[in-house]
Amino acid sequence: MKPISRNNFFFFLTLTALVACDKGNPVQPTNDFDKVHENDGFVSIFDGKSLDGWDGDSSIWRVENGLIVGELTPESNLKTNTFLIWKGGEPGDFELKVDFKITRDGNSGINYRSERLEDIPYALRGYQADIDGKNTYTGQNYEERKRTTLAYRGQKTRINPQDPPGEIREFVERNAWRGLELTEDLGDRDSLRTLLHSEDWNHMHLVIQGKVLKHFVNGVLMSEVWDEDEVNKSLKGLLGFQVHVGPPMKVELKNIFLKER
Image (tube, rainbow, N blue to C red):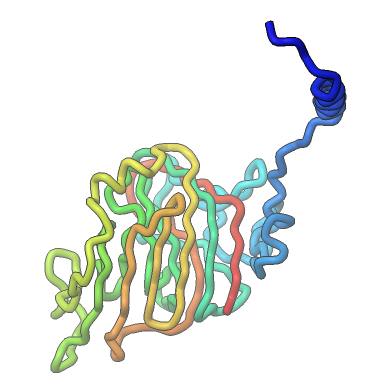
């Protein structure tokens, strides 16, 4: 065994003392999202206690254990897709960060730059960051009640106008916009799917700037749309969370932060 020098011995004692102090006063990890992001310009739009500032069907939406919960039960009588709509404005260019968890049979999404329909309760029309429990569509860009699919997961697309313009449904084929032009492959759709956590927490980050719409999930770019369709694109509108018509399901949401540009 190599003898310990006098200097090394005192270094060892100092290090031991520091470790002992650290054990007595361990550094605690923080879950305070407000403090982490307070210098980034993000603002919480959910108080963690109530649905103040939101508008939705109270038979579907509630707050439970600090989470927004949207749930369909066997007794639910939902006839059309329904949304919990933020009443705080109509963001144009922005970033939105949300943690979500959804049951396997669930179908949901985050609508943005959307308009509210007057003839259907709690219904929105507009861009949607798709979420589903089987992770078949999670991360793609689907335009609710409008041009349908604008980019599948793993795609960067350009959305071209149709000439001459006409009824939107005339330009939809197989639930996708005919003007969808693939400009770049962002990754294999099924490989990207492996990065998503089934029936567990995932993090959605939307980066919306002008005609460019980016959907990140768990830090990975899942889809990107460049909307060149001057007739049909939207530059601002409502935010909302969706519960889709279908079997019993539950979607949970937390850490909802918005930064407008």
